[in-house]
Image (tube, rainbow, N blue to C red; front, side, top):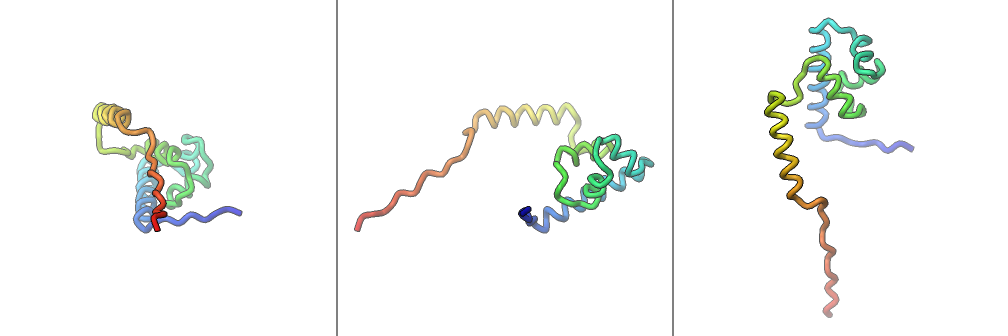
Length: 110
């Protein structure tokens, strides 16, 4: 039995907006849905799910489709993006590898 996942209203709105941006960019570039789905290596059904803002498609697939129609994922040029990425790698190297909560001690003092 497949478990249903719920999403916040903000997430649903963001997915819807991003899907509409992708569809508008595709149409402005004169690409049919079949052409874009073939270029992205996905089915037409997956592209439709992306354009309608459904949460199921993998994020990498969604980002690839956005890139193919010219949507910048970040408002940074490639050099600045690489610099930020390197800084975050350095920061993550300094942070703990995982977060663990210490077990609660049992108060057995009667």
